[in-house]
Image (cartoon, rainbow over all chains, first blue to last red; front, top):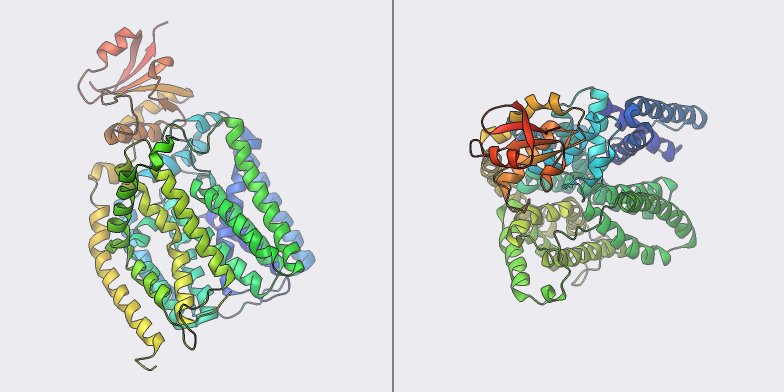
Length: 439
Length: 142
């Protein structure tokens, strides 16, 4: 528990300092949860790099340095601790958490080690980092390790270190906290634009999606990716409303964490960097300077870390073993047909997706009050939808090039890819359906 | 709120979806969660191999031999399940299934009794710990 509390306090402290004299908003509470997770995971990584077999001592040292500097800056800058009232109230939000909690406890009691990839990939890596002494390097060469960055394993190892034991509840509670933070982001970010009731309805709808509730508890990295994607959109939106270093830095940090969570995150960040660069290029010069400097430096730092790690350790971005780069595969109509049929039957019309595609249709056909059809989307909303669309195009090609059993591959991964976008889509859809606001 | 207003209609549609989704959840989540045998849900991954952990504590990489492996690690879910379970239980020792006889220590994790006898003799290994007639830890003969 100490590790989770410490990471939250670090995230909260950093965000509080960035807020300066401004009032702390309920939304910031959920944003700081994700920020803390990302920072803690990075601290763990540097402790392993620097400390080797003394990583635990180095971790304590680094954590205390961070807390010391945060404390010193707090004393110097004296940021305001005044907080806006929680609207919707904390009680309504807690009631919303009830179904989420019941489902996650049920899953934890029946599957304490999480789903297959939870123990065989994510928690296995954490387990290796936690148990190994100085020889942590071989893990990067291992047969199952040539994919996905390390944010989640580092964070789980951080939690285990402060707990002193490899408990099953650290990954389970982490998954639950990230689900709550994602739900909090949807509700409190929507509440400021569409009002309390529609925001709570959106939250209730999100946790009613069977696949969301189930997969969020699986202890996979998808919930982190979903959180960072939505978090970056919310931070960008807040930045556009009121340009400040706080939200620019937060958006940059979330993009960086996105690239450090999963391979899908790297693809998303590359697409977003391209689209957002063109978006901010047309904005006012002050926006450009502040946003681009923070955005590029943070993204650059994390992507370079990723490239450095992979190239120096000889880990390919896309493993040749599982993909065949043959042009003939693109023209294999049976593969395309198989992919489209699978998505149509098992995702679009599947009850586990909770009618999201029906809502998307409503969203596409919706006629906003006093406006013509189709209603206009804001440029940032449009940019995010383009990123999502482009992402699916890129991913379709990856499926087409798969050399292992395509059906099996689709069965185990397609839903997870859609999962990443669920909270962001719910946020965008409800924002537009209830108030056709362009941003 | 006017029932015919746009917001009210959207709310009704969403409310119907929510009710439907919670009904689906009560069927979907228990069904998918409990679909795995209890051995793979409740017990620690690779629990069968935990007694071997002390022997391998200082070994960075060991070989992993199983009779169900047919040259493609990902194509056989059972092999994958057993290898990854063993990997989790014996971490930080890494297990190599592709070049298993390259290392001094080899873990034989068989589905058929005594499947390890021939490959072990052929590659010059001797048993240092036998958990049962299917799971054996062997070391290369000096």
